[in-house]
Image 1 (cartoon, rainbow, N blue to C red):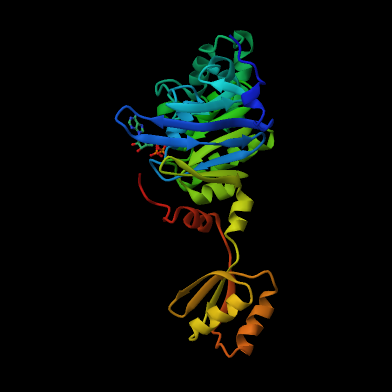
Image 2: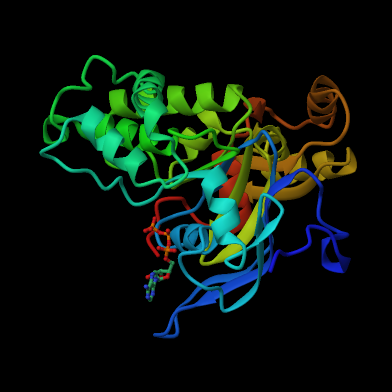
Length: 324
Ligand SMILES: Nc1ncnc2c1ncn2[C@@H]1O[C@H](COP(=O)(O)OP(=O)(O)OP(=O)(O)O)[C@@H](O)[C@H]1O
């Protein structure tokens, strides 16, 4: 019954991967290819952002990882075990917040958690009140614990959902769009909470369609578009990869491009009086001097700061706020 953790197929698996998928694919019955050959590697201890516009396949992936739907093909491992096959063994170690928490509005926040905890057959009833109090404290809801959940703001509901996910110690938290629909204050609270949880060593996998959210809280990112993985890796590396495009503004763009090319700049683009390029590996001051020496009239010279957004646009060739 138990799947061996090691085996031929595991040899290539990075030992610290908390989530690893290989060729994971989901085609829905209607024919929609929602996830297409996904190879995802989520390192232990990371705050991993799963970034993509609406309809890019994030929720479908998460549902496969949580054993809620079967992949059409490919494999997925969570905490080293195959899902959905070993889902029952794995999922108790995973806290999940998917598509908003299911709460009873007529019950208080505390009573919701007590009910939640009671539904877990492994949870000792004698230690229940302590567990619930600790979870409420963790998400900052102690003062509001006696209020009915229907009187909670959306942000408070999300926090209560997180508290439910945190009743047991978890090695992995999976959060599907945890700040969706929240006001800026609610977003800040959830982000702070995610950072705090991660600092305790819990791996957090969160999906988002918000670039700046990923930049603010995540150590790693995978970028999805139309069911396909475009790239994945540390956020800093990705943003750095997009950094430092050279921008020269000049009435002599053709001459500028020639000089830049001679100096080793690549990927030159001329647009009106703007020449942009991947800068050569030398002091920008030298490049500027070379332009001036060659008689190029330089109005502006600089290196653009790269962002994850630049990386995304460069990788996908599209703006970010596109639907489906
Ligand atoms: N149950 C389903 N049956 C058929 N198609 C589906 C189903 N669920 C999702 N899809 C389609 O699969 C694609 C991926 O959807 P998915 O919900 O995984 O994307 P997403 O990135 O999570 O987007 P969102 O943020 O809008 O939820 C979309 O084109 C969607 O219309």
